Amino acid sequence: MDKIKVGLVGCGDISSVYLKNCTKKFNNIEVVACADLIPERAEEKAKEFGILKAYTLDEMLHDPEIQIVLNLTIPHAHSHICLQVLAAGKNIYVEKPLAITREDGRKILDFAKERGLLVGAAPDTFLGGGLQTCRKIIDEGWIGKPIAVNAFMMGHRPESWHPDPEFLYKSGGGPMFDMGPYYLTALVSLLGPVHRVTGMVKKCFPQRTVMTGPKAGKVIDVDVPTHVVGVLDFESGVLGNLVTSFDVWGSKLPNIEIYGSEGTLVIPDPNTFGGPIFIKKPNATEWEEIPLIDGFVDNARGIGLFDMADALLLGGEHRASGSMAYHILDIMHGFFDASQDGSCCKLNSSCKRPESLRE
Image 1 (spheres, rainbow, N blue to C red):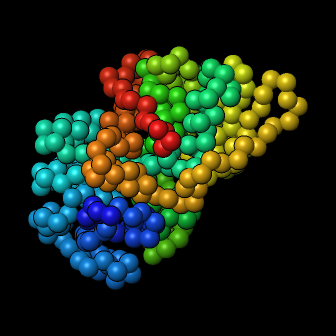
Image 2: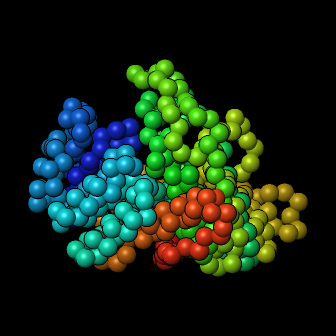
C-alpha cells in the first residue's frame, strides 16, 4: 500500500500517542521525521519510535519527501507554523485549536485553498466508535428529531497533573479553547453547524500554582476566563447549552445529552473514542446501554490524519477538516464576543456536517 510521508513538529507530551498510532495502527502513514524547538526532544522521540530523521523545522520544510506536516506545537505557534508549512507546499494537520484568532484561522484556510493544499485539524475523537455509534443512532431516527442538547465539561486544576500547564491559562487556553473543541466538534458532527450563539464568561481565580513536575511551585497568572457558559442555536433548529470550567471541584452532570422527539441519548466523553452510550425511550422504565459499532474505541488520536492521508491517496474529502475546525473556532469566539457585548452573536462561518465513517 502507498503511504503518505509525514513529518511531526512539536515533540511534547501528546506526541507519544500520535507516534504510537501512526507507526503501529494506521497503514497509510509513515512518519519519516520529527522536529522540536529543543533538538534533544526530537532526537529522543526519533529514537523511541524508530524515526529516521530528527530535524529542525526548516530542514523538515525543505524535505521533498514529506507530504503532510503534523503540527503538535502549543496553540500560540499553530498559525505561524501552519502558514510556513503551506508556504513550503505541504499539507497541514494541526492539533486543536486551529488558531487562536479568527483572522489567523481564516489566513490558514485561504492560503491552503490558494495553494491547492489540505488543512486537517484535531480533535478527531468524533471518528471513534463511541461517537460514530451515536451518529448512527441519530441518523437512523432512534430518538426521533433532535430538539435540544446539554453539554458539560466540569473540572478543576489541570495544573495538578500537567507538568507544564502555563499555556492553559494564557490566550488560546482556558477550558473553552482547551476542551471546548472536543465537545463542539462532537456536537457539530452529530447535529450539524451552528447559526448563532450567546454566552457569559468569568475568571474565578487570578493565579494558579503548578503542582507536579520540574515546575512545581511556580505561580501562574491567569489571563483567560476559566468558567464559560455558552448557548447554541444550530442551523437545524436544535438549541443547546455548553458549560466548560476549570473551577469546579466535582460534578455529576453528564458529558452530553441529546434530547429527541422520541427519546434521550447519553453521549460518552467526547475526549475519548469509546462508550458508554445510553438511550431512554418514551415507554421504557430503564435506560438501555447501546453496544458500539465496529471501529476505533481505544485512544486512536491520529485517525483524522489517517483519514486525510486517505483523501490524498484516493481522492474525496477528509472529515476532520479545516473548515469544521474554523467553524469551531468561530463558535468559541462567539461566546466571548457575546459575553463582552451582552448580545447574541450571529456566526459568519458554517461547515458541512462530516460524513460518518460508514458513508
